[in-house]
Image (cartoon, rainbow, N blue to C red; front, side):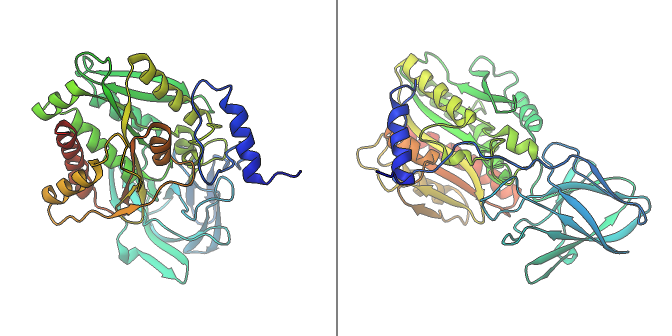
Length: 408
């Protein structure tokens, strides 16, 4: 009898379930997350010698696959994904400069079927800015930008670059002086040997404390979600009375970068094995997800604790919370309603955008629910949500989460 793809995956799942140290989780729609080949971009500086124009992808987080001259004032930027199929969310990042100061035009060229998504961000010296709309030209689906070039390189990126080393510098500074209640460790390595860090946060006795899990950077370009994660975690660690009371009652496991290879390689979406890690929360084919699940599971079993809430920080076109409809009988059946009510009451001119639907594919939100009967939420921030607004949202969502959980 010939097995369908979904039945074959289910059979593999049942076989693996008997030999894994962690429990696998069945989803309605299984996804093949076995390793796929990727096309590595060649790290180099592209040169238009007759024009004195240079473009480089020789840095972590870069994505540039070629540069072609059109005329004396315009060049084409070739941007390709790491592999296919892949989301239509083209990511780019490169540095450009010229021998002489002058304006120059660059046109983005993606493979057929892919469109420009992100408004360009520029970095000169240490500051990031958004490219003024008067310097962005769109004709049908073709986008061209105008830049004022000089001998000093300008970084142009779909989103602000936060490489694995940038993330490390951030959390290292965040937890300085807080080592008595923030335990840092690298719990594993990515496919290419990059560290997988975790911050284990609690005060007093850890035995039996209910656990909240925070995740981010599964998808490399989704930096606005990471900004919200930063503010959220910063608020939990601000040494306020609220924070102190919360950490005396609960334990937080915060994972600041789940896909460091994809981030540093400048991938549109996948890890170094060509897989969307947020489709692997079932049989754990990918090392990043497998080791994360093993760490969470080991932590729970060792301290006889339960996982009650998981927040996975992402980015999409607009701010939205993706929730599961199943709530009755879970760890926190009233949390979502109480939390969202509190957010609207404590953020000016804010209306929660909730999209509820039980996870059918192997995403973290579903893993929290089906694997742990816990509340799972995918916490999405819009691509263009202003940074100061993200900071407010990140701060208040953390504060109100702590209030709700302390009052439950």
